[in-house]
Image (cartoon, rainbow, N blue to C red; front, top):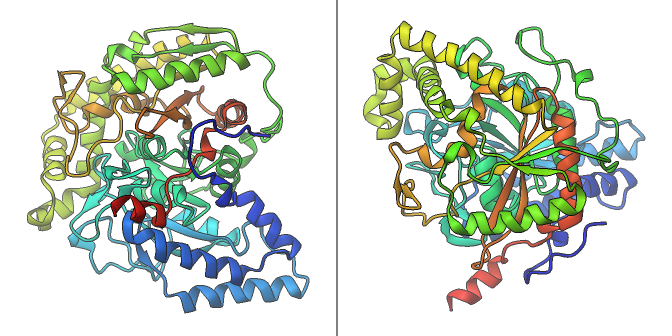
Length: 489
């Protein structure tokens, strides 16, 4: 059992876990219709302040879907695992017959004819898609705002950012609007908002979740799609629904390679952990370091064999990431850039231009360096089972700030440099998970990043689960709408 978090705050037990909702639905204790009604009621209340869900399916349509689930269950039909569970999809992923804007005016009226593969898998698992979660334009940057829907606010302090680019998903989870949410991550878009909003975000191993319809985009393969939830067990549940090989994606992994044994609750006996408080020499704000120092003490109660490391093996990884990211932007958005660049934000334009200007020599050099750095990182894993890092180098910042321009008085050279603690791992196909790790003096969340060897997604989640159950930080939920309104009076 998770122990209660000693800090003040409303318990997240008022937000049921997905596994509990599914059990209640299966037993008949809860109907899909009543769950859907309460979901829309919570969205109506919480979303007016937080702006996490940007597009919502009409409630009548969602209730009809819920009624079909209840009827099938009453008839004794065998239903899929997620049957009746409301779900909102990040606005970067295609959703059939549902507005998908990618946060851009260019796609303000785009309604896809098909689902992205992982969306179709979630529907096949019984989930009911009720809307879309907000994202920055084309997913660029770790602060969720766009000209169509505005800014998504942090539930723990609505004057602060929720992170991004899966900021809408993380904020929706933290406020209990949904129990599961998807995210995508090229440079930290699952991990950063999870850390800022006190939820769990897993960047899976490359290929764990096929990236269709983007499988043919070479450089975009740094980007992955994965699960977000309030707890590790819910995250694992969603990953199992999303994962599995597809013949159209040659890098996709067989679901059998996601080994769900031992169980998440079966704590690993002994582990060698490497802790990098300032990975590759990156600057980290004092409140982040302070919270994570306490988190490491908690982790040492579980696994005493923790060695502090500098991870200088990855000191050149940010340069590689920057080149490959620019190439991915050019590969995926060059056509739109040629036709509609006047409708794009400057940071997106700059990334596409950088990618278009790359020479073959620069790309080849980056790929060679990626291979060398991958070998160096794997040599670190010869000494350690898992690595521990800060997720973010900064605390959630004010919503009017587009991105931090300095960290500890060290100037950032681009709009993504401040999130390098995530970016430096993205080129290497390793699973990375953000787990709630505590709160600063102002009550803002901090996440701990757990990194495993390629393919060891389940092991990463087992370690995260052990830490979650030992600490219980996920149980401290943000203020309710009523509490936020009272504070404003």
